[in-house]
Amino acid sequence: MRRGILAVLAAAALVWVLPNTASAQGRCETGRGVWADQAVANAISLYALEWAPFGATEVGWGTYLPLLQKELGTDCEPGTSDFAAALAGFQARYALPATGVFDQATFNVLKGVLQERRPFVMARIRDECPEPPPLRELGYLEVQEEHADRLTRLLRRDVLDAYRRMAAAARYEVPEIRNDPELLQIFSGFRDPEADSARCAAERNCDGLRRAVCSPHRTGTAVDLYVGQLLGMGVDSTRPESRQHMSQGAAYRWLVRNAGRFGFVPYIYEPWHWEWVGP
Image (cartoon, rainbow, N blue to C red; front, side):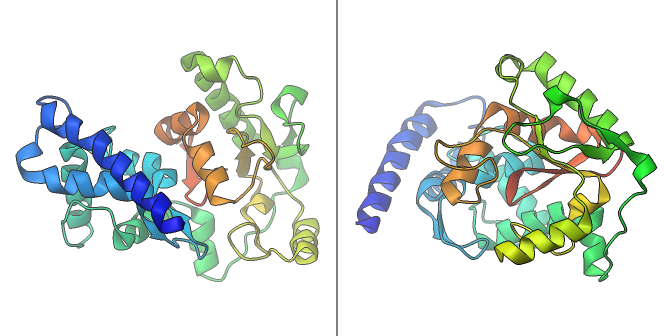
């Protein structure tokens, strides 16, 4: 049954990409003579690749496409020759075979590049667990900034200022975000380290993906932002279909392109989780 579904998806991807690569002569198809086969392969695997990037099986890699496009410096879709060319350039830059085709090795490099931009991760690699800030450095969120699903209260003051500027810019620039007051509300900010450790131990999910014994939320610089949710799933559901849904929304796509302007960097596994690293 699963193979049948994947075959249908692969066929649909081919139907989608071939007319585009056959007819487009301009934008995103300037390398069609060189990268056409790779474009077809990427269009198929976008929906049909069966893999386990974080341990559990996922189908397709659309969840990670916005971050990959940002890193490649292109908004071309995977089924285009220019995306394949940009991907090959990325692969060559990091000493991978410049095939122009998405694969696990390419994803691993993308993940590593993004993780290196998170000072908290680098501290954990050094076996350090940053101390929480003193209470005087924490500020209270306003009611309209908190998501009703899981109320939070505090964030480091400089991070809160940056968040407010970022949320205001997003609402100014994107009507869909402006018209939905839930989008970009915070459902987790500063978390007391002792309470956080006790919670993840009690829930048995101290796995480093969903929750860690030493969490970046202890620093007051990490925010979990509402970027949408699937019906019946939580605002931080890690189910593959949930994370893929979030990654396709206007809020997440805006964050990928613009959060860096305000000092925030992403966590590739959780579309809702962003960390402030400064200007």
